[in-house]
Image (cartoon, rainbow, N blue to C red):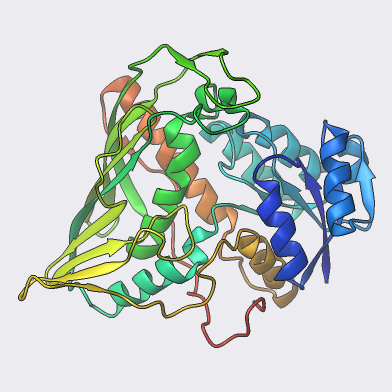
Length: 367
């Protein structure tokens, strides 16, 4: 059993802690670290975690720890992951891999030099909904894929998030925050990306926080917050992608793929199951039918990617959520950002091949 040290005990940590405790028994959380010690203490008390460290360097130095789970803010991902790799630890990081492609490149190079694995979120593509979609596409349900559209619309995270300022700074924004969910879902259904072409806007220079505890404070926006992109895949399929913190929800499907036999409405890629529906529209009859799940993990199973990575390290295979995936997604997102700045298409330099699908015959929690 591989042992994990968690750096960062913020909002996203709760579901990881729950799933460590209840679902995934092939990994053991043995230490936590947060700049706000009370957060680490609360996690320790609730889940009986053996150790608390005041600094990440102390956690990295623990010889018992095999994998560092990096749950810090996006602009901190690089330094935390780099420090863990230098200390000889494997790393599983929340998305994105880095705040820019250069950071991602440096981390990948360091991991390869040291013979270590760096993988990361999102792992929602391993859930019941998107695994079912992948299987149905591969089996030809919608025929040959022609194209599609994706829409992530939000009128600001400052209405609900307790610490929303980082969403509007370097490493944040709708592209780096939510883009990983959509692009990871798409490449696992359609394969690698060849080219991206994007435009961007920053409609609002300030956002008023209405969530507690920072209600009434003003956020200065330093990055684009609305992107419209055309993605061309290696197969030649093109998909349009809108990701925005400035749109009122137009009630459009999160992911809609068009095929020669019909259309597939994929579920919300931020979720594991079918919270927003998974449907097929038959091209001949025009009938829209609900699609049943064919895989496990239909509820929030964050930590699934980490558990798969631990199993892969022990089994001598590549993790499904390895850096080969997170690095490709990071280049696509930063390529969109560069395309929006230059007005020119961005040609990808990395290549992506899908890993094996999930095995629906395994018991729950076993990878």
